[in-house]
Length: 162
Image (cartoon, rainbow, N blue to C red):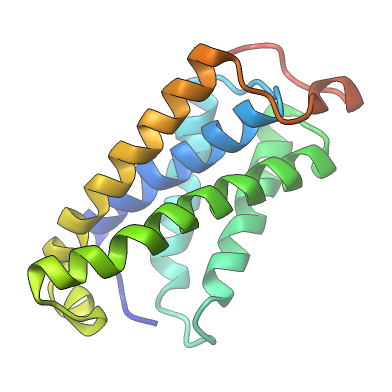
């Protein structure tokens, strides 16, 4: 796995984690305030920075990151672990689907390869922002239309703040 510079964590990873949490939790009617979500995103982003330097099988860092986020959500917002697990994993899946759809198009447009993203972090950051924009639009639609897949709030202790 390639190393991510600190500015990529700041410009990509932290916003990505923030939206993963917000979108996933919104779809299951779980509330998390923005301050708590931002703090969790920053802590998880710092973890990602160091985790990406550990020589592990590609993809394992994503699984570890997901579980770190889940544990932070449980610790900070007293959301039951099952609810946090389901919502955060769905957030990862949604973000992954958007990224999977956009990345081949971006690489074709820029005449780049996956290796170029490692060599040129700013290219990676530029390619990330359309993914971020689509995810923000999805989050706004979910919030404005009050789309809830399943109401997990009734299953355990949750925080009522938004």
